Structure formats: C-alpha cells, structure tokens
Image (cartoon, rainbow, N blue to C red):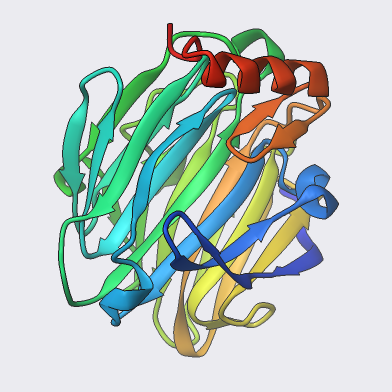
Length: 279
C-alpha cells in the first residue's frame, strides 16, 4: 500500500538579479539548503522586456556542482572553455557538470520578445566535485511527454516515471543523486499521481496557475511517502517536480563555487585567480 506524501514546507521565490543585471526570481540560501538537498538553487527568468535579460551572463566560473538550464520561451547561447557552444531554445535543456571547473557564458540569442526559463543547481557529492567537466545538450524532441487523461501532460526531462504499466525514462543519464526533473501541466481541477522514491527529496515549484496547496511562485517540500498527488486549482497548473537522493554532506558556498569546506572554496578562488581552475 502506498503512502501519500504531505506538504511540509513552502518556500517563496524572491525577486533578485544576477549576471549583467538579469532580473530573476530565486529560491536559494543557507536557510533552505537542507530542504532542497541535493539541489542548491532554482532561478526563473520570465520577462517580455528585453531590458530585463539582455545583459545575460558573461563569462564566469563554476566548480563543484551541475547546472541545468531549461527554456520555455526564447533562446540562450552557451559557450565554455572546452570549446562547447550551442543555442538552446523553447523546450530545450542544457545539462552542464562543472566538476573541477568550467568557465562559460550564457547570453540571450534575441533582442526582443519573451524570455522564460529556469536554471537549477544540482550538488555533486564530495567524491565527484573534482571530476572533469562535461556537457549535455538535449533537444525538445528528445524529451518524452506523457499525455494524461483529461488533457494534462508530463514532460520527463530526467528520471523514470511509471505510466500505464510502462516506465518512461528521461534522456539524462542517472548520476549519484539520481535526479528527477518533470514539467507537469494540468488542466483546471485536474490531478496526477506520481510514484516517488521514499528515500528521495521531492519538491514542486508552481510557475503557472495554482495547485490546491501552492500558488504561483511557491515551492512545496513534500516528505514521508512513496506517492504524490498533484491537484490543480480552477485555473489549471504548470509546475516543475524535482526529486533526488539527498547527499547530507556539508555545503560551503561562495558565489559560483560549491564545495564541502571553506578551505576548498578558497582553493577554488585561488585556482581561478591563478588560471588553474580549468587546467
């Protein structure tokens, strides 16, 4: 018999800015690290005004974690020190493992129009923080979508979802944290039940409409159970569902460096300043 997960905490996204003045809504911070584990941060960009995003994210470093960029509208061009370059547009995903070190830029590939997307930071375990950097670019056509009764839809970016006796697997190879990343779209008053690993964290960010428990811009932390039922409100709902194996390791962060101790962070800063971060 399955046990339904219950909503334990609600985290509100906060208006912020990053890069060259890009306006974002952010969920992050030391006060929520334990609740998000293995995730570190989630940013949302959503604007029809190019002044809010045209500055982009010029070249900057990372070490010790993974970044996942998922675009709904608009396009970004990514470049890194390894020579990787590509444009991700509506429905595409870029999954970058910074590992020992990456220097990259993310710049808008448009001068007007709507820009809407997310960047998720996923922690790496201590044993993998210094592994070589890598990059996956996943086109919208590679991401399977489950059509639900009543008109709903679930896009499976990462992880495995059981549906009508079959397993639908996302295109991202499963690492130590075994991440789940779903884009769930439900019609008015629609519902969907997800079989969830009871040992994993489970988070829901509503970014359109509302559920019966969360309004737009709120992330719910769900605990204790192997099943989650999402119930949309009268306007329908679109949400990201995130899951993963908690690392339960110390987190030491300074800007784009996420390690286990401040000494390791200081090493990363020195390596970057001395040109050794990506050596």
